[in-house]
Image 1 (cartoon, rainbow, N blue to C red):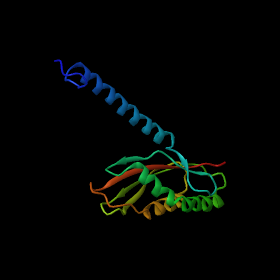
Image 2 (tube, rainbow, N blue to C red):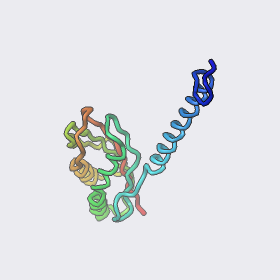
Image 3 (cartoon, rainbow, N blue to C red):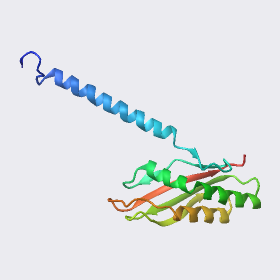
Image 4 (cartoon, helix red, strand yellow):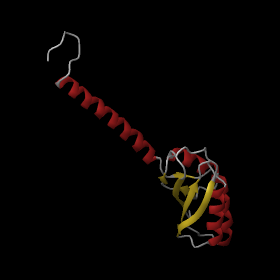
Length: 155
């Protein structure tokens, strides 16, 4: 399997080249994913600094970052939910895990509290109401199911 000088011939060289390219692609994908994972928990809004949006679980064909950005559009409202709850319970802390469904036209069709440790039904209702107001682009692949923990700290 000898070719003319300067040409790539099938054989060992092409297998090594393919392995190198595969390694580079894998490395780039891991670098992008780790940057995303490192950024996974962020403070919501510039308000109290007590509300943090946790790691998303997404079932469906919508990018996590798109969903995360939409959540941050409601961050000041989530801070207001937190502030109202703190008037009733100053040392409130815990997590409200919200599960919501985005329909094919980008509207949140359903938002429910999947789990909560804050023990404040009014705060939970307020959070679910804010999630229901989110807007997304239309999805080509049908519905998207998202679960997101929202952490409320007492500091």
